[in-house]
Image (tube, rainbow, N blue to C red; front, top):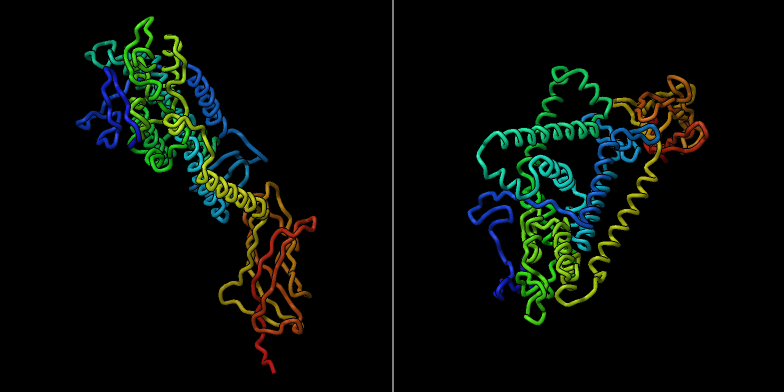
Length: 482
């Protein structure tokens, strides 16, 4: 990414700003994978991120068992078209609301990125949480910290390396299998998953095969592909280069304060000797999970994980220098010492976001408890009996309530209609279910002036509250008008 300034490296040389690279931090100049062995991070931001990650992991593992109003808190059953979000049932008829919610989420991500950069990647993204807070911690537990991992990687396949790698890969596979089963709970429900486990793989072979495929995908991602998901695959990482500007808050290296960088000498007056606060200890590089040097400027591979901030602050405290050499800041704050401002672009995004959220809330509030349709069967017409004209309609009722409903049908316009059901005059619909049937609607011959006349049919609950209306047409005999 191009920058408007140059950085000065050790011994006073000028490092030109990065304008183009044909490789990423996890690849060498030949395009070969360069495995990243990040040092175990520690510090204030790492503690905060750990708390956030553990909270989100706890939410992930408990949410399939939560219920609200007797419904699953979150269930996305695409196969059977059962959708529950925050305990609220959604049906294919409500898909446009979900689509609008997805668009609103995208706008929110854009706004959030414009203001706060890639904080989502470092703090909330499931890829980062599982990799850094689960799988890398297993690396540290079994193989040790950075230096021990590098030593183990270089050594021959002896007994130590074989049993450590076998143990680690086995734990990775078990965790991947657990993640897959929990993901299935969000699709079919936890009861169904437990039933499939009890019945065995051969009873539900297709589901078992899908689980194996997803387990292999999770294992491949977290055991081998790792940070390359962020640097090579994730479209959000590519998008951030378009969204961020000089007023975006990101993890930045204060080059004005840090350069010229040089090694630490105790008792030295660095300012008098023309040296910056950066002692070139390289600790910000060895803790980076994507293998970049934050001192080279803002890069697409940076996920704003704050590991470099904690590492640098630790060194600053030990050397008696003020912390914050690497910190959350805007580019203008570093270059021009300007405070963060709420730009016109950010204000525009905020207005659009609020309007979309308001419209989404309006749709959710007014989507109706029961949806009704009255359709004339194909080929049906009318019949006349006892001075009354009668039409037959097929009705379909969808109960979106969290309780059973008792429905009464009335014709709103025109008046003097008679409604006759083949069964009881009141229809009982169980929650979340669809009820179908037929109804006859009759009018006195004097009321029907046209061969096709518009009518409006309403449905009411047992308390007399209007739930939904449906407009259709009523057929009658052709009459010449003079």
